[in-house]
Amino acid sequence: MVYLLAIFGMVCWGVAPIFAKIGLNNANPMAALVLRTLMAAGMVTAWIGVSGSLGQVKQIPFNSWILLGIEAILATLIGDLAYYAAIKRGEVSVVTVIMASSPLVTMICAIIFLGEQITTFRVIGATFIILGIILIV
Image (cartoon, one colour):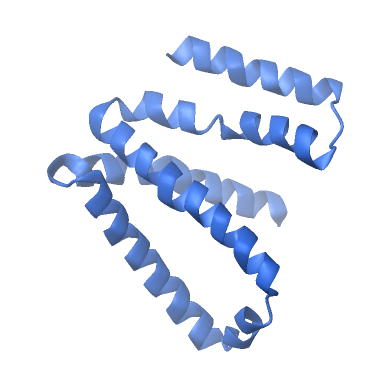
């Protein structure tokens, strides 16, 4: 089931930039990001309301709120705004490959800040990511 969900997510992330590129033709990236975020927030809020899981949100500790807020600022606000600005101005196929290389940054940060281990397979994977960026760009 994990792999099917991951494949489904991959397909969604692969198709979504096409709609974003076309949608950004006549839109400012910041305004488009606001619209997209409001739409997603509305759908998630409705989903959690219908499922009766709103109480679980209230149970999240304050320090987790802070950490999730920082993640939201970095990923959803700054990262997505940079992504929208880049695909508006550049080729979506190149921009998405560069943006999809974020696991390389995550891997390095996880090693430095979380003490995760450097393994042969991780080094090989990172090498392939770097080579892919060089080949595409």
